Length: 217
Ligand SMILES: NC(=O)c1ccc[n+]([C@@H]2O[C@H](COP(=O)([O-])OP(=O)(O)OC[C@H]3O[C@@H](n4cnc5c(N)ncnc54)[C@H](OP(=O)(O)O)[C@@H]3O)[C@@H](O)[C@H]2O)c1
Image (cartoon, rainbow, N blue to C red):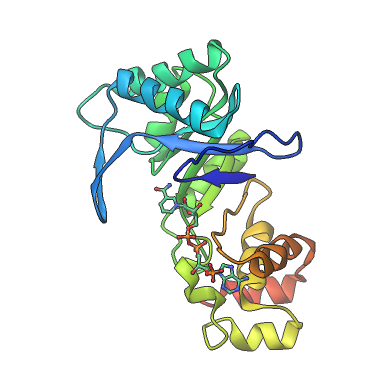
């Protein structure tokens, strides 16, 4: 899956690529993120992403944040309308509580939930368990803790040496082993790192290895 933060003009329509993006936050300046869940704005962002990406439908369109200024059912309802119109294939949520997921599911099917989660930040653990039980994909953002877990002298350095793997690979292997619902989205500007991160999906952790990593917090 490819996550698109700032969609650029592209022929991003390869058959074997799943494209995911979000709407619901304004960027009014550096490091400024303002929720805006007006349904018309969500629709506008979808239309603009379709144009920039050069695709007929966005595989996964996520509500970036629930905006308390508008009813949740209107925000999720607009995404459901876009899906019904064929502009979106699946609807997802981001940074939500279990109660909000349940409220959204009363409106429409929710394919995925994207919340902050990694080896060292696990507040979303109950939500992850809920998603697994309900058959909803869980997309942990900051899977590498913005790079802290991928450092050669970071908390996973020793385990990585013992395992003959990169620290980032172990962080991702732990996430994948934690739940079959998990789909990590590590960010990178390096093709080498991209290839290494993809290879992490082939790492199978033993119970002992998983428990040892689980103790790193
Ligand atoms: N839903 C939300 O509200 C939300 C909020 C924030 C972020 N996100 C999403 O979360 C995703 C990940 O965010 P992120 O990229 O900021 O954090 P991240 O994936 O936790 O960490 C990325 C950092 O790790 C480094 N890295 C990646 N692979 C590596 C490797 N194999 N070896 C060494 N270093 C490696 C990268 O550097 P290099 O470039 O040098 O590889 C980069 O500095 C993005 O798709 C983003 O859109 C979602």
